[in-house]
Image (cartoon, rainbow, N blue to C red; front, side, top):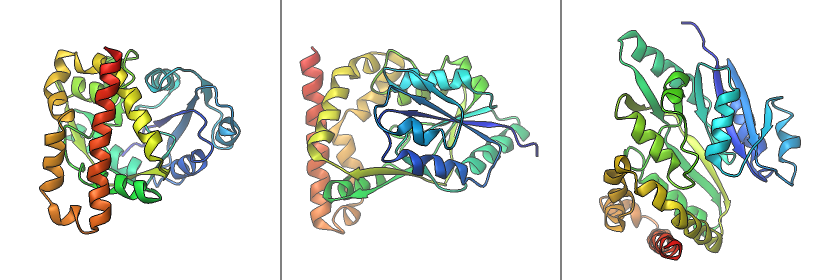
Length: 275
């Protein structure tokens, strides 16, 4: 099997706490034919200094991730594209598994449009534990997870990420591609470093996304999935489908339910404020 070039594109913004571990996890992949592209949004910390230890392909662009990712794709030379965030760490076989799965599909003439990579969270403090528990319920849920790996020709066919979207851009691209091609998944994980998660900062971020969600939700192609994504009843349905898991640690389980309720409230307030 020929080993095609894969471009890993990482948008950054004051990411010095996590970017070294992120890029090291790319460098340590079992699949080696990789280029790393970092697109930085005017960081004022040591982000760019750290990234230049791993790659010369460091560009500047903003103001949001969609624009950064699209520039990274434009600058890439790879046959495939993988988009990750600066607080992600890849388990060692992620890229190998993506490329191999795509190759197998081509052998049987079944075109894959994108590959979902499941995520698990880790971090410090109580709220990071709550977030890790929450994320564990989303593995295999196709209206929550979204593809991160794409053949470059398909990414270009759908014109990449919609730069008008600040919230829901991952879901938006995923939903466009799956109207024509297969979206599938691998079993290797991405680890999401939540750090010392602040409850107030979490709600602030969700409120900000709430002010931007209208552009995503008003697209007709997104409306069906958005009904599920925006439903607290659907979300609680996922959790209470496995009550033993929720309450294996009752304090964390109750904290997770409270956190998720408050997040939905913050998004709703942001949406109302935008109106």
